[in-house]
Length: 546
Ligand SMILES: *[C@@H]1O[C@H](CO)[C@@H](O)[C@H](O)[C@H]1NC(C)=O
Ligand SMILES: *[C@@H]1O[C@H](CO)[C@@H](O)[C@H](O)[C@H]1NC(C)=O
Ligand SMILES: *[C@@H]1O[C@H](CO)[C@@H](O)[C@H](O)[C@H]1NC(C)=O
Ligand SMILES: *[C@@H]1O[C@H](CO)[C@@H](O)[C@H](O)[C@H]1NC(C)=O
Ligand SMILES: *[C@@H]1O[C@H](CO)[C@@H](O)[C@H](O)[C@H]1NC(C)=O
Ligand SMILES: *[C@@H]1O[C@H](CO)[C@@H](O)[C@H](O)[C@H]1NC(C)=O
Image (cartoon, rainbow, N blue to C red; front, side):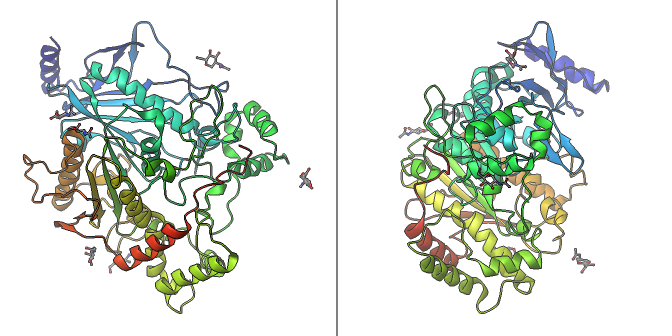
């Protein structure tokens, strides 16, 4: 019956009647109609409410989604959560919408890939601007994207019942529960769900792996350039962040209850616009951003995490296959924000983030100088040594945390773990272009994204060479989602991607050519591993009372 309907739709498409409604889907909330993609190859259901939030649930887990009578037209994906942009504050508070893309070819149940968008937990949405589905649709998987609350609305963390923290992550969990409940109606297999994300999205995936609230919601995970055990993933001073926002609004208080009272009454637009002004060079000083936090245990509240992800992942024993990856020049993105001033500031103070704890100021100074010497020799940190600066950023914030987290989960998981190192440079390395580094070799942070998604924001013709990379990336990702193995025996890819083992991390080097290799930059890796194994801070995480 459904099949016949699809054939009819194809015929309609052949008659050039585009924008046809996609087959109706019935879920518990009601009946949905979507539309057929312009080329007729997939159906899209956009902007479906998966949970509710408004001023009464601000800063807390969302409420269940609404139901409706009649047919809900799921064709509008322009929703996004409130955020500050170049053109002012955009978005609406009731922003918890999910998009489902379904290949039109009948074959089911299909594996499901759920993408969690990035944007430092303050900007972004799940829409087609960046996350166009066309490439993945050719791989016969269902793609799901969605919005979650951002900034102070998603991550105000005061350690009290009214604002326990991580509301944005609770939205993500609500979206995954929605998928479990409803994806079969779209032809998806709820037992074959892969979550994936990049940057803040990857931190989210990594936290969801560490969380006890996510059992049974997914069975594979792809973590692209960001992990929850990185120095910038968790805000250890969430009360300080909140007091800075209060100050912006004209209030001088450090009392969580007072801050909550103030933030809950103010219009969401004014609240989201009140970002504490970041001093130069503090781009990654996360206590100035609203980031995930370690929650207090609060009666009646379902926490996402109540301990540091490192401590949780150390005991990680979910049977979930994981793929970890980073790019060769992640740090270019951060270098783009540097000025001579900010570099001088880095040179003057010690280099580490507050996820390290030394016995004394002298010891911290000593290790900071060791790191500076290894990267810069006798040079001062300035644009003269720019290549070493972005290399330091690449290592410290992305590559090394990613490898160390790989080792951590390899210790306990029975499932396979894969690693990649993306070094390809082509016409779709969009962040490298946007940040003004188009002549730089290798790949900047997020540069693999446009080889997985056909973002509307990057509408340029795709070269033959880049198309090969698109096909390879999407095939490997989809194979991983289907089989837990990016290059199964049925694959025609010119490589066998071997999983890492407890004894050895093995990486697929993704470039013009695909090849397996050992850890890149072993000298730096040993340095960071040594420092983190001795000085990683594992307790006393928050600046509010527990
Ligand atoms: C918030 O949403 C809930 C559930 O839909 C509703 O019951 C409540 O009245 C709403 N509150 C406000 C302030 O809009
Ligand atoms: C803020 O409040 C504290 C404690 O009440 C007080 O010591 C401080 O002077 C106040 N700061 C400003 C700028 O009013
Ligand atoms: C882990 O999951 C895989 C695939 O779903 C299964 O074959 C295997 O038996 C599971 N292993 C354990 C230890 O549960
Ligand atoms: C890149 O290189 C080309 C050719 O050498 C040069 O014309 C262009 O200005 C360079 N662009 C940047 C952003 O450095
Ligand atoms: C990355 O690509 C650049 C430019 O092609 C090359 O010089 C470099 O060796 C590559 N890095 C690795 C680790 O393969
Ligand atoms: C996931 O989907 C793939 C492709 O349809 C299928 O081969 C595989 O058996 C499924 N895996 C599970 C665990 O259901």
